Amino acid sequence: AASWFIMILLAVCAMFLSSDQLPESSTIVETLSPWFESHGISDLKPFDAWLNTMRPRTVRSGEQLVLQGQSDNHLFFVDRGLLRLYYNTPDGKERNKAFYAEGSMLGAVSAAIRQRPASFAIQALEQCQLVEAEFPVLFATAHQNPATARILIDLLAEAFIRNESREAMLLTLSAEDRYRWLLEHEPMLVNRVPQFHLASYIGIDAVSLSRLKRRLKLD
Image (cartoon, rainbow, N blue to C red):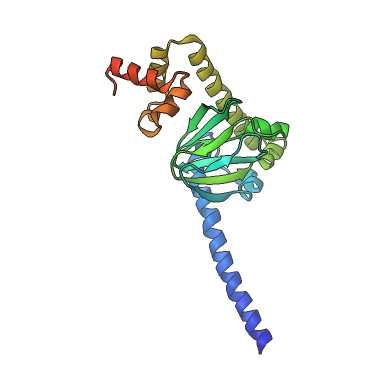
């Protein structure tokens, strides 16, 4: 009698597990479909191996996803929320590298490719709903299929263009023009990111940014 009870219990548990797994997988595909479509991808069959590595993840505001100096092979798709990438300097300061909001895919990609520790950290600035995926699986399948190769190339190209644009802003523009650049290229950050983080991002201190905003009457 005990053995029959155990068999029935296991069967019931299996039913619940399978019913949980299918909606999760289905929800992930639904979440990512617009992102794939934005890259010209409608057939997700070539991505089956990569999709099978994905899981939903909720992170609290202030939570660290990746620590500087830590090895991490994940990509994160932002369904809801805001993340920042930043460097810790030897003198204990933080320098913001980038911010990623809804619809973005990010991670310590260059570190994952080179199999080295991440050179920067990733932190949630808001409570975030993410999809976490394994980058090495995408990287491996990109050598075998044009569709996965296209996604990988797009990810790397977007990061390169973003970094080059910000580098030019920091190296060629005045403080006032850097703030104008921020308003033109990433205006949503102004209302979602604390001022001291914005100041770090455009390479000035928070006091100077406050004075600049008052002078421009953009408070």
